[in-house]
Length: 186
Length: 336
Image (cartoon, each protein chain N blue to C red):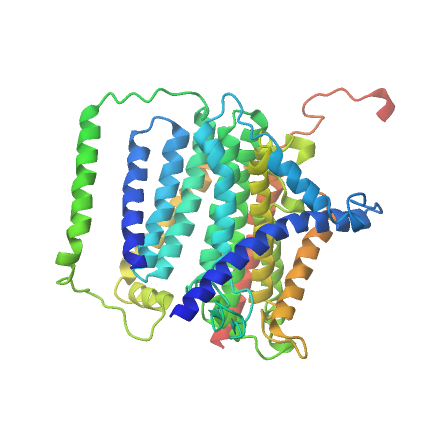
């Protein structure tokens, strides 16, 4: 009972929030709805009993969208009044139609859902993180390691790009700013 | 099921009421403790020992004009304090507070209800609590960006810096205790330390405890790391334009986070609510939480605060390598 109510609430809210993300021209609205939608998606994992994945979704995307905000802060004036003109009504039409279809499918899904079988059913007696670790380090070991390697490459690349002036301090001392010393100090 | 449901509802109401009220009482304690450490008197005029100062402050907060600056983004400006307060309480919902107990049948209506130790017993509680507290930093971030104020923007930028600094350290520091216990559930952590003071995880993981405490101070913006609203530099940072109850919500959120961090520290490292000799479990955890709360005030009275770039340097170049080395050593010891 609670689960069904929560599921429909989350699905409507997530679809609505991501619609705002796509359509709004105000950077603050777009990013806030993106963050809220990402947090609400973790609710689906919790409803399905995949607590660990839900928490990972929460932790990862809270941090990721926070970094997006930092860029938004640098490039946009978040408080400027932006007129939300929907020049492309086709996009609005398609997206809202798509969401309507999606909602119908969501409501009809329990009818189809009985015939779905899990390819890798979770083993009995294992907790969430254990079963994920088991699948990750046996069945999907190669993709997992490749992803790790790619992240390492990306990290090294980021360091090389950003690290040219890393040995210099960001803070400037008085002498470097050429502030004349008062006579009393000498 | 019904007994448990009623008990859970009672627990939710109790936690909301007590923690929200504790935020008010916490300000009184903070002012008194700081005053004694700085050889002042603190609040003395209103009521005995200045105790009614809380009521006076509450009346002031509730009746103050709710003010929205002219160029602010109104919706986000109004939402931001709610984010802080709400996430703080959601995080608290997965933390065990006291041992499970049954309300005696003598009490009408709610007699026989089982009050669980934790509102939502999810088996990855540690990560959930830390993730939710991380999401709580969206409050200051949105508040700072929405208020059309230069100090607010600086406060928001510092929020992002602080978040990107401490989060890695928090996660890595508790990884070693998690490896020892083999579970992410806080109840399991509590049950792993039932053998008296000697079985507390802090004796096996002192480094992890210190790292977690430092990251916890950054997470709750307590003083060595209170960059977001440091008065001497950025007026009031993200809270510059806030007044009245909306400012109060930031405040309640911050104090609820302090209590959560104190609870986490005492459950993960100090045995949680297991009975301690002749001290019953509920009193033991209360004493531990009070001590950590006091420690936060103590540190505030003793230490100056540091710059944002120093915080980032400290977290990434000092604390993170120590945390990784700690994890590797723990892993080797467990393997052997």
